[in-house]
Image (cartoon, rainbow over all chains, first blue to last red; front, side, top):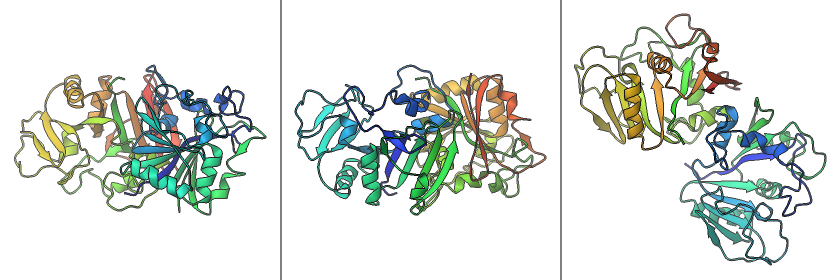
Length: 214
Length: 214
């Protein structure tokens, strides 16, 4: 079996927007109440950040429970790690993900600015520069035969899509319209020349968009 | 997290029938062309019996790829192991599942007739008598903290449902009407007093029925 590159549980609005334009430490998504996009995931039993025993076990739960399955590494854009721009000034701040990051694998953070790797619990963050194909090669090696998750954000997913490197995408489209921000697509049909698409409406209100290569 | 008892990828017709009444070695489901019920699963990339690299990666694939996730043991009725009735006459015949059974865990086969355990590849079959609760207890112990899959057939699922032991069910309902045979339910609504239900139609034509405890 090949090592797939997979976008998983990625959230956009009905008009294709995944984040606002003005990210800050207080607003990681650059959006007021970003949970309007991802609350469907938080309601499920298998949500990776869940600490109690509750949650739903319907359709949405199949997507959150798949988050870690057969994943050996993640690639993320710098903005999914933190809001800083330019050289890393503050090494004491170690990202938005807390002392127990939900990744549990090596994570490759794309940045042109050097920073030493560090480990929080069982997640090691590496800071890497280069073309998407080269970074994917490194992530595949670290994944030891397992798949690689492409974590986002929007710009990073677009970059790997444009390079033809993404094998499957699961995008949850919320019924909410945002109007402006960082846009994944004008319409999901933009990808139909290269991918199969199934659209699965969920009782929670989101429409799961499932793409895999033609 | 509790160890759940889960029915997964269980197939019935639109009138609730999972198997014919006359099972034989040639007709494991007692049905002509039983693939009319389960071909949706065989079309997916993650179907456990798949040997090539193809298959779809849409909605149906989320169900087949979940087959082994966090499962540490399976319980099955005797008829899912083989068509024999009464005492085991032929120990040389070791079930329908070939030399590489798709379970990869201990499997507990319910039967009143003693038979020694044996191992095929990484699956060990144990032959056990007793009440559902006691058999579940043994399977949970063997599963080392993981969930237990309830594999069927119809009578076995009914028996554990009646004992209140099933935590979640995924039943794929095909658009095919069979008329007679072994019936899981008159209607899925029979279970609504005890379970939440989401019905998710798939582009393949089946309707995935997802139940979890209220």
